Length: 446
Ligand SMILES: [Zn+2]
Image 1 (spheres, protein in one colour):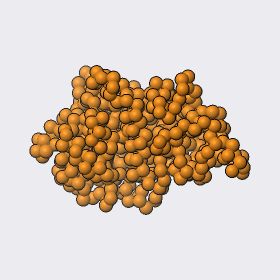
Image 2: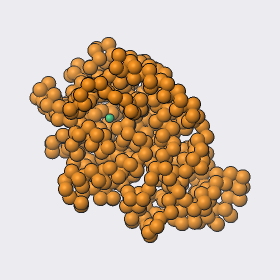
Image 3: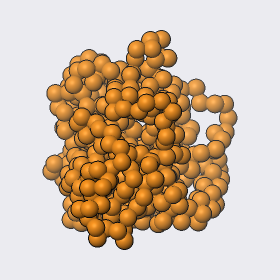
Image 4: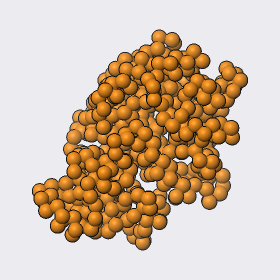
């Protein structure tokens, strides 16, 4: 397929903005890029499959480093009683009740609505963290089917926890192990697996040990770390050490492991994350919503920790997460020099692509370059001020809207064209989701 009449944003190193260029896709990869006239001459047979970008920006699909498809049905739901006063109460009164109310059908539609949202807003690779304590076995297959239906790319895991008793902890471990082996056998370029853990504060030594023992070799973990002080105090009480030290003792850290949040870690913990090559993800919208504090993302980046950008189940409109990160740290520190555009791009573009490549090593992601996966979006953005590779982050922060994504292509397949979804039936998914969510809400309060 030849994409013509495009202004390419490569997100390469260095980033380039190439006007009146074309992009040639072959199967699931980008095969070539260059001036439009050159590529038209070079690939005359591509005429039948030509896609006119009509001067829009054509750029790599966005990547989300940490999300929860299972949280979609919480939208608009009331929590009975007084509003939760802190994050531990939010967990107990919202998330740990909602996840128990989910059936396999709910898991499917919760994932599908997130995937529709991702296609519409140009997020083509997602790293998910799943929980459904009353529907554990096979839940990752249900999500995997939804992912394959969508045409997007996702890395899945089930969050092991002791909060629902030893049987469910065991079932969670088994679900991870089963799905990890399945993903290795299938070698499907759209699906990957990691080993999910909820958080240190809901995991006993015994369960952490069992996870390490049961996890297939070369597996990484995906866990929440120090999202609230409670996680650190619990770890100190249980083990006499802080969360990151505790996880390291059980062999949980490493270059395939994701630690989400890391807001309340100390200097030594940051140092251990760097030395072990462990990934950190930052979710500013969620952190503000839960009032859990602002992670020292700039300090971590300066130290050499690989910090990425996730959405923690907020909309799959990653530029919203960019904007929040950009504003949050300025407000939190009363310093307008904090979290500049390049820092946000380093997390959201460079580091997210590197993290995604850990799970999808077959081809580069997050970049327009020959050989990379053909994950491409069209953005109907016509700058009212000069746009350069250097000031692009600020155009994204102050000018881009996720609704400007008009076309989404993943693995060379056009999933949305001129805002029309071609594979997912949004009307059916929306109606069914609304019906299922209503029942989940009834079980939630009942
Ligand atoms: Zn999370």
